[in-house]
Image: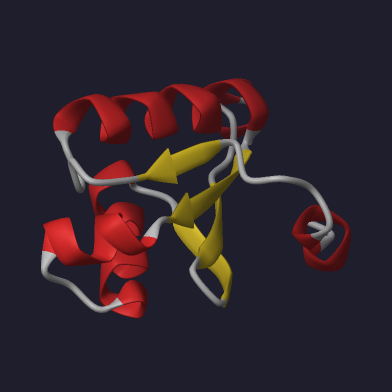
Length: 91
């Protein structure tokens, strides 16, 4: 189980900025989810403008596109979690 409070204290690993939600950003999030099972993402103000989406909509969109579960949203930062491939295969 993910300790959400502990993870909220860590810095975001990925920023969504002025280029919005481009394929390379999605691919990097997927890569980190596969490796670590959890990733913290920050949406910069320019990212909200570029995407044209409200922060919660943007977080849900990223979760859908990466196949991850949205753990929580705090301000413009959100946490995604996904079982690592090894964990999923072991079940």
